[in-house]
Length: 124
Image (cartoon, rainbow, N blue to C red; front, side):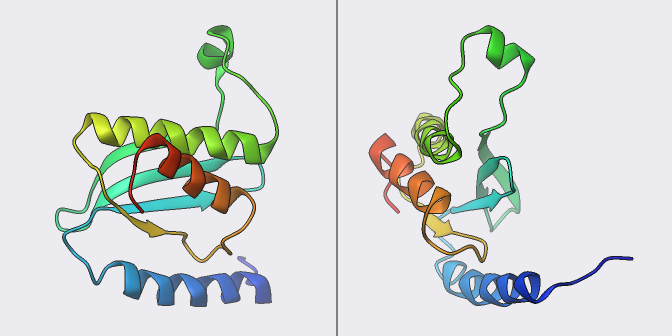
């Protein structure tokens, strides 16, 4: 059985409030992120069609490790994910996005991902 903790319900409440504000501007695609204990996942979603346009993650698989992908701390990896997703988005013609932090507080890995995306050229 799934156990819901107070921390989890608080994040879900914040997530719902944030999603209301982010989806008000339908013209902008949404940069959504998920932060697990090990990795950070980011994707740019078009809410009108409900499709993912671009995605990136801090997960380093065997192929990436063979090519010389850098490891580092989780915050450094988050910064790199932000730069990677910005590069992919600019390649698809996406210049401005709405940042959906998915109920997570804006500090640490979440903040570094946003900074990396801004440095990569995205307007948040």
